[in-house]
Length: 265
Image (cartoon, rainbow, N blue to C red; front, side, top):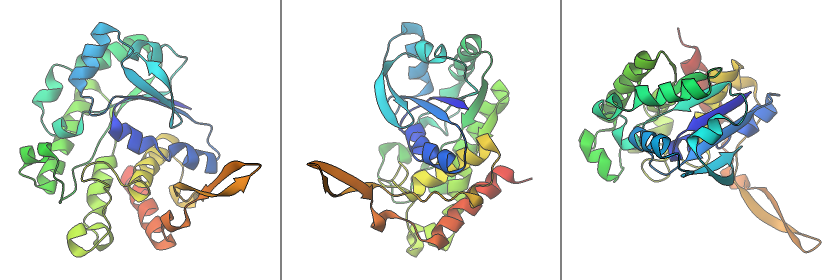
């Protein structure tokens, strides 16, 4: 399976653990991300017109080269191509109106075999100081409702399915374990990006269930960042940062949330 994201840092977050989860689930996956931080649909369209190799290309999470949208679309057969809006603009429909349909049309013309899907991003953390949060009254629920409405409208406009990451994040934030106002753990690392381990894992788990149809609850992969644990032949050896690994209880919560949201009636 090959997936291409025309995205930004939020697609980087969603893809970060995806290859590891897929490997653990026995899924042959290649995932590409066209990355520009904070890139909006409008800027994607500007890059379509210019043809500029403006993106950092990440393949399976590793930066490879600079790339244009067209060269990525033409780089072999794609099963899926994901589109998303920049986070701050995600709940403002006017930011989609003149950009989403032309961008989708361009993708369809140049990769007609691929299914285009909408990556539903997430609202900011309640404590976020991101300046765009003010557009939503610094209200997490208001931002989520606005972006959810826009993504649903966007999906209808281009006839696409939605990867429900934003909705999954929102529902988990209502639980005691992940409600920061009740002492729960934040799913964000800086008020808007997902946390390095559990937040990113949750998004990747949603993608995994959505694209493969497999049961993430049966997947054995446990996320953890790497740290240097010693040397061998003068070279550093890296291993999992044990303090990073979520406990089984939280892993079960994340897996159940991802599985249930994708498979809800």
